[in-house]
Length: 557
Image 1 (tube, rainbow, N blue to C red):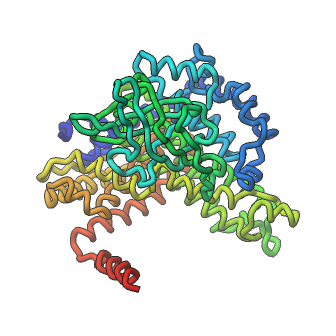
Image 2 (tube, rainbow, N blue to C red; image 1 turned 180 degrees about the horizontal axis):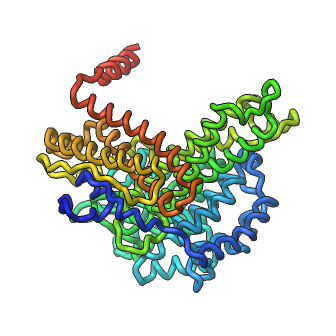
Image 3 (cartoon, rainbow, N blue to C red; image 1 turned 45 degrees about the vertical axis):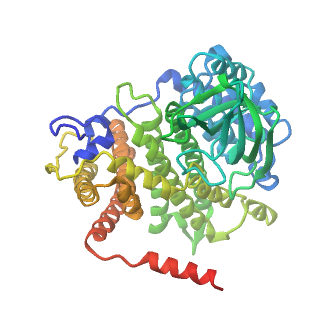
């Protein structure tokens, strides 16, 4: 139920359901501590030169293969144990520190950076904290201590959006083990993993239930079908087949029938999903800024520096603001806030936020560099031009919007997460608050007040939607409406994170970057509100009729 109107909302999403911007909750914006920063800086000073000497991102993109000896060198350096606890030979990095390290690698090669991110943020090391004491935990600890490469396989040929996995886990007659059967697609690290976790559906007398099963990839029945050549991130993923893979019963984690993963695994995995998106997005934007700076430093038109033109300045400033926003969202979701606060919605929404910002930044800078030709780095190198791999990272940026589920599916789920908290019926309106004491510039205080007004408008819209469509299943079928609600909520979270970081920083550069980001975000918010309210009051075009007629015509040809 919605919180009491006179109490601070217990979470961001609860603030949305009361129409009240929970600014109090953003006041203590998290920052990495000095010890964490020092440890991460030391690792970066070691890893950076290693990556620069071993990794050629263009060559990995061309061959779709890891450089000979790279995996062994990374294992020797302990980089497969970045987040593992020290007693297992690990560095004990936090999720945010992992992002910092993996971004450095991803700026050289997205594939290698994300391989390390999966290894340390999604697979065995990440799931160890939610694994109860027993044989499975012992297995994970032993493999982590050995520096084994691990992966996690969830996506079925039918996609990730079915409630339960298509892959099956059948209990043997003696009850000692499960036999896994099925295919998994697009599995990061699958081609190099020594240990892998797999989602599967167990059929029991009481009905089906979700499970996660861990085994070494040398187990009979495990097969790597083929490498997956994505439009970006080459060499990272493969498809696998399970042909009766035998997994001891004690190496399984079981859930229920409500979702494809047991809840503890799903919750822990959300941080890895956010880290993966943040690593890729920050690498793309920071490389784009580097390429733009070099290009603008030498490019002139009729004797006038290109950087002196209004449009170019807007491109640069917007890209800097995108970097500030992605970093803000990453810190908010991955750093320990030091207080009890439910960030489940923000952690989920962060993926679309940061990948959307990186895609816009990449598109913007590819256009800027298009002034001297739209080429691959190899083509630039052949003619003696500066071989910025902007095209390669542009492909990576587009892939990021799909990896971890397609962006519009994520928006739909975000909208459902919000609408599910509403009860039918109208509630009392709240006055739009003022924030005279917020440590923000005048422009950003205006932004904050305007965003508070959008909180109230979204609350009204959601209450009307639930009142008109009290059946959650029927409301969910209004997919475009629910997607717009999800996008609105996601944009609002991004603005709050950006303004909160600017308020804590206090300096002019942070205030200016927050002003640029929020100005653009408010235009997007206004457009989303218009589309939602227009959908309530006007007849929409008959998309279903047009789509069905065209598809039917194809069938009759």
